[in-house]
Length: 224
Image 1 (cartoon, one colour):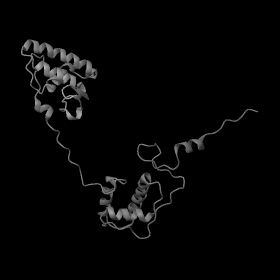
Image 2 (cartoon, rainbow, N blue to C red):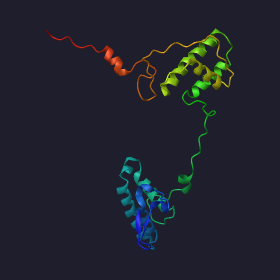
Image 3 (cartoon, rainbow, N blue to C red):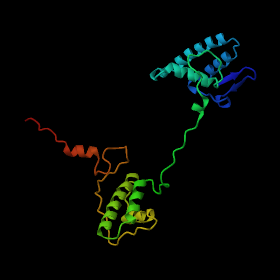
Image 4 (tube, rainbow, N blue to C red):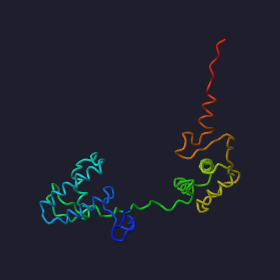
């Protein structure tokens, strides 16, 4: 933000032209515009070297990169809009190399139906749909339901009924998978604690780390 001398009003950066290299600021852009207006090529080249020195001071982290001097001159050309007639130790970079938009990476598969279960759960359910009915398939469905209940409780600390998990399995399978009659899940211990990924090391393990430490801690005997 600066004060416009002609209109005596504030000039905000949001109303100005977008900077090609914001890390150097608008003052460096003004310096580059001034050196482009110098008619003498030798003087113009001398001023360009001075601007590069200023850019080096303003962007000291560039020293951590390989061939940082070459990069500074590339940045100078970019600020000048790739239109700079000077004697440079490096040639002007090709504009298309820096202005080409990256190719978007296509997303694999369809949209996730239930984020708290994840895409892998949907893949497992699709595989189960192809399995023949029998005790093996029933056992696999039960194991899947137990795991889905744990995932459910990671994001929702309230209790969840078995029927809710069974209904989610059938819904995620587009009702191709039917829960066998009489199937039930094992009860969860009252002190079970399921943490969200990245928030603890006891994901899916009953009891917190502090509680387990208290159980294993033994006070030393007092000397009589």
